[in-house]
Image (cartoon, rainbow, N blue to C red):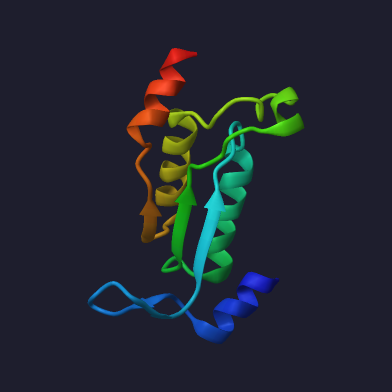
Length: 114
């Protein structure tokens, strides 16, 4: 698989003391509404087949647009619970370097209006 080969070539992400990335693999995963099973499969794959020390960015930016709005559960925004579950799955999988994003206040307010 491509991620395994990239990791073989560059290893885990290494940062300078300033926080600047020097070399290594950074993995980004867009958490999808109702996608707990897929997120679990992906994070367990990363932990077992790549490295528990992989730097993983769990992204919470999903926003439905176009025809996606007609296909539940993709028709609505990512819930805070979906994102919390993704964080818990990563923890259970043993991923030790997790870049998590807190939900912006605006997104939280918009979600509670529905």
